[in-house]
Image 1 (cartoon, rainbow, N blue to C red):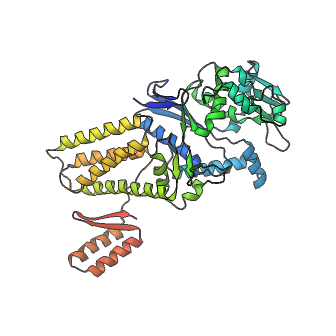
Image 2 (cartoon, one colour):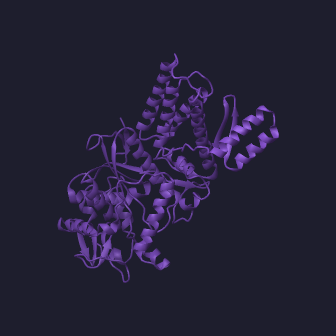
Image 3 (spheres, rainbow, N blue to C red):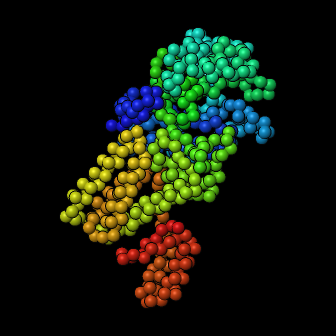
Length: 468
């Protein structure tokens, strides 16, 4: 049984879906005004890995993740770039899709956009106004935070604690609120800004309202899992709960999941655009294999912070290469393996135990760090039996498929590349040159293949190759 740490209850709980065999999952997506940095990518990778594991365990996942395409930051970027806000949004939605594709992040079942849901948002806010949970003030609409009696339950804060911080805020917006704690559902348009007609005049949605509207519209009044980064726990997710449950009268999400930050430097400072210490995915995948970055992030348990550095990336690259080599060795051994051996039952039992161990680790709140440790054990097993004749072809095939399946959970897929006829002939010629002790020609061919990205490995079982 899968257990999930629920931020709402601050404990691990056995996952019980609303509908057997299905998962309704909403994950807060990016505000599309710039390229995503690797701190942003952490959330996408973490929840993609969680989604993939649910699917590995046989669940059908309806995965919805939004694009915030109307926001102060987008409007500011549009002015700086001298294009419209929708053009800014589309440019960076396209960039997000390209970057996440490179990281082998599966496309969401649906990526709803704010601008496509303006009428839904207005209708939602109108219901809150009619119920007395919201009020209009000078063209803005605010949520009455104190009216929702459970406010603060997600972030485990009392209304009195929150009031102390809110009372220190100043400005014209604070002056038109009934209470410093109230937050905006609809914002009056400023001159020159993108806006829409509403019962309260020209304006646009507040940030928090959009996710409530899109999650409920596309997944229902109550969903199984709502996810996002730790920085969204308060106020964004807290506000989503207040406005959603006030409207529907039902729990908004049964499980709340939050991924840890990416930190940098000796002080392990959180990576963020506001601090200027970020590296964009767009930049880094020009320098390193995107699979290395994916592996680096996917194999840390999602709630734990990740310390980003050249050293930790190099460690990830080395470990990924070891797994790839183990699979390549095993694939090479397949052609010469026997169809059946007396010890097959013993080996199949060993593989079954490793599978049980992998599932047990991943069932425990998606503990990817422990899960990948089991994968390393299977890679060692393959390295042992890929170099002798003690394992049959069916067993070897099962072990290969098992490891590939686990790596697939982490979003790692190794393509099986084929040599073209010219390179095959060169390898055959090199083998013949070695037999004839023509080492000069043998070395010449090795160097020629190396220049084409083909690395040769001479073993007792013959010459193997891999892409360098």
